[in-house]
Amino acid sequence: MTTVAFQLNWEPNGFQAPYFLARDRGFYDEEGLEVQFVEGHGSPFAAEQTARGRSDLGLAGGSAVLSVQSEGFDPLAVAAVTQKTPAAVYTLRDVFGEPLERPGQLAGRTVAPSATKTRILTAQLLENEGIREDVELLPVDPNTHHRVQHQLLDGEVDAAVGVVTNGTELEWEHDHAADELHIGSYLDIYGMTIVANHELVTDDPGAVRAFLRATARGWAAATNDPNAAVDALVARNATLERRREIERLKFRRAAEDLQFADHVRQAGWGNQDGERWRTLAGTLAETDLLDGPVDPDAAWTNEYLGASTDAIGDYAARIDR
Image 1 (cartoon, rainbow, N blue to C red):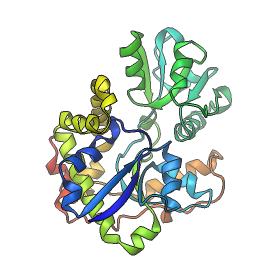
Image 2: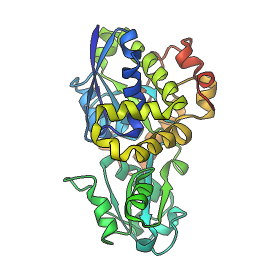
Image 3: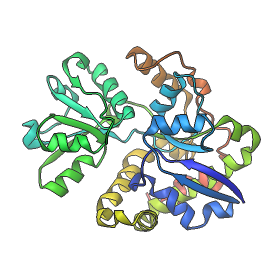
């Protein structure tokens, strides 16, 4: 068995359920892999840890991959997991004063982001809408990403930035009407990607291919049986039992709204488009969100996907859509 460390972008949650299901069903074992899951502290952290060789593979957003590259690191995206970012601006209607339906309503408001990646994407959104200077976009609180929810509940800020379902979660737990503005509906950029360090792809490219095959199977199995996916997640972290419904909702949003698209139907699971990477790099550069130059064409590759593999090339036929 080959042992690989897989750096998650955050603590286990519904968005990551397919990876735990792949492990529980033995998909990684069948590929000769023992996958060690490592909890994370955000996409930039996962991308940097992987680039440094402190993990073999990682889970990081596309914008974080380029942001980290601009700092001198070289994470390599070997698969696009979700075609849209899960980032979302959310608010409580009694705090915001009206339903949040479009980005322009954020002008004159104070917005608190939960993580570096979501702050980057929010800045892009506001810049594209021409209201970046009209919104007080707060720095990321270094203590805990949950603090923005408390700030919103207390009325200290007008809106918060996290991921899809964060608003729904507050609505369910605190009985306040909530609204979510999905950033992926306005920015045509990749959401989560699987990144690898260059030592692994050079020394053991077969392990990368094996991991992607097993992971594609995990995504298909989870999409067809979300309850089993959440069971696998809860088995990893029993404290999520009380949040089972919200974690199931997270995964369903990821599978139905973020992961599957026409490009996946045509090109297969994980396939990436260079033009989208170049567009993302241009947008980040224009909004001064990079610390240095980047080469978007060096940030990704489809070389290890193996489109002829059923789990990848015929992914659309494997899921119940």
